Length: 205
Length: 205
DNA sequence: TCGATTTGCGGAGACAGTCTCCGTTTATTA
DNA sequence: TAATAAACGGAGACTGTCTCCGCAAATCGA
Image 1 (cartoon, rainbow over the protein chains, first blue to last red):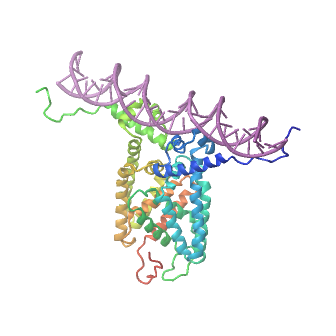
Image 2 (image 1 turned 30 degrees about the vertical axis):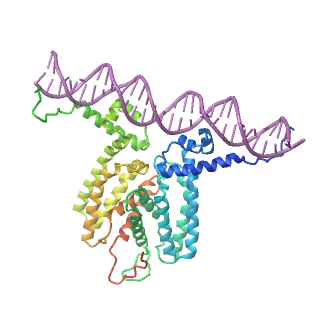
Image 3 (image 1 turned 135 degrees about the vertical axis):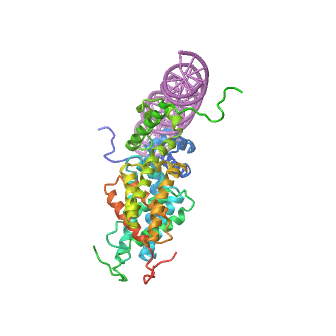
């Protein structure tokens, strides 16, 4: 047998590769945020002072790059969920998180580009990053349901979908207020159905 | 004075130009619907059996073409508003129209491409077609408010924004039901606050 | 520390899409 | 039917995408 290390002895990943990867992510995030999801990737490579080949090796497709960029943000949202859930009443936590969600994707123009690619043809992009987000809102809604603030048959994802709408038109000047209003409408519409004048009793259909 | 017909005697528009314009719209609509907003315009021209120049003369930018394609749909929605308003109770008309809206943009994948370009950088695209749509929902909401079904301070556009969210994820298998649920949530959340006793609107700002 | 080896880099270049320019064709009008 | 304005079409310049492969650099065993 030639000198073959028994089975698995992969080399340590090269330092420059790691550097480059990080660098690409940083630049790409800036570029996406500034100019939308259609920025020239060659341009990104140039800004990052690397060759196009390097960029495409790290992130074979545009979607892969987008995905990587947004994963960080998704993680932040997931973290916020945990924090809010600990420190606030159920509905308040939910409300706060929803507002944060809109804030993230709107002010940072973050989801918009991602949507770009979702609608442009089904891709797995959102699938991955959104499992975290879905998890977060799921937990929040569940807690609010258990507390009697939200009706039990509500699908948390419905709320997400509605929020995405606002984020799309975030360019409109009043997006922030619109978001706030929408969140209120949604929460109000998600309350358990009050039976005539019952305070907090709820009947199922 | 050279032979100049008094002032305004523009020629009748050429027949082939009109034919071509219509042809382009038809083909483009098919193409956008099938393959998203990023289809090759040269390809569209080829399918329409015309030169690229002709296409670009009629519609100088991609947005202009999208706009023209969607204008028809927007008009249909506006027409539906008038019809519903005549034949249904205010809230029901509003609900029906909202569902129709989602149906249009979801099943026909129509708005999705348009959004593509809105988010990719502010453009006037939606502005134009949406004035009709805005007008429609405005009228419906106004009627519902006057009938006491919707609280008076509601911004109709908020509802639109929420609906756009659903249409984005229309690819998901359950979009239709999700849309229905969301519409209900929104309508419920838009009702006047029952000032009689339910003043316990739990949260403020 | 020094090869040997492997991993990663870079950019030239093939290809595809965008959009313009202008010589040619065609519809309209007289 | 001729004159003329309007519209056509496609060649081609340009920009962006993505691959390929010779070269450079990092790691590791000795």
